[in-house]
Length: 368
Image 1 (cartoon, rainbow, N blue to C red):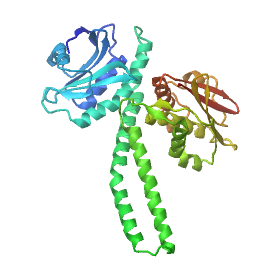
Image 2: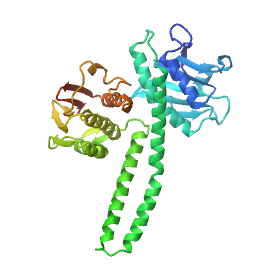
Image 3: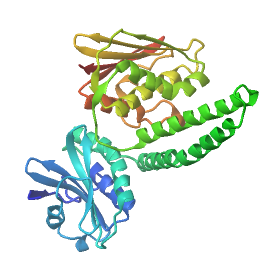
Image 4: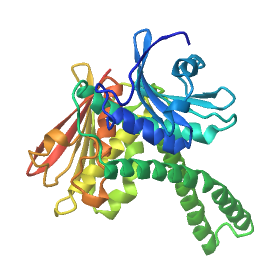
């Protein structure tokens, strides 16, 4: 790529050493076990280097030479697998890129690319905060918060591995069940038990597939979606949690809702986050009703999720969409509503909240 470079060293006054950029670069280097890592941000026809993490800065290669080897913003591994780059995307907008470099050929593999792609969403949250306070020295994320980020990434990777590996034994179980059923009389009492086993294995397989869909890191892909089906999919995903908490779910969907272009997997994730929060909010009340409504109003699709919980304290309302803010203690990550808001805004929509002592309503508004 032929680009002019405007390099900002990480130890200058303009970019404090403990800035979010430096924290990101340091974590990328530790994540990839590479010689050095950097965070870059595009500026028209230039690339601004915001931070560099290296054990021995004096031995690092020329930055301009490294950047010139990139064909585009990635994600990709190039230069004999010594150079890895992943974009930091907010919807279709490029916020920056993460770069790792190793002096040894063959260093980076596909699993390193996947790790860096998973981390790019963490970096996006940190850059978004940095962007709001650009030019002002801000308080950096604490070591505990960064550790939580690392744990969340690890959990995501383990979830994806579990969902992938569980598929093979499930296929074996269903195959053996069918073999046994073929030898049983059609009206035999034991046959019903095998039918239950087969249906249960299909449910586990469906849950595993959904776990993979949620954990996969990919660019937004829109398709025509039936909102009623999307809501049904979201409810099926949380059904065990809803049932375990004795919640009464009521739906009121306007008939013949129009089809709308959405990234189905991302929007299901956003709705699931709201449904889970609604269930959690009713843990201490006797009357547990979860309402879901959908209607068209003024050329906008509005999806409302309401609960009969105790409501959100007024002092907390301005913070609920901020990353890491949670009132659930150790049970919460503080990322659910942040991710939900990001997904909805990526679809050029908005989310509003109305809360009081008798419950809370989140309203998703999406353009048709």
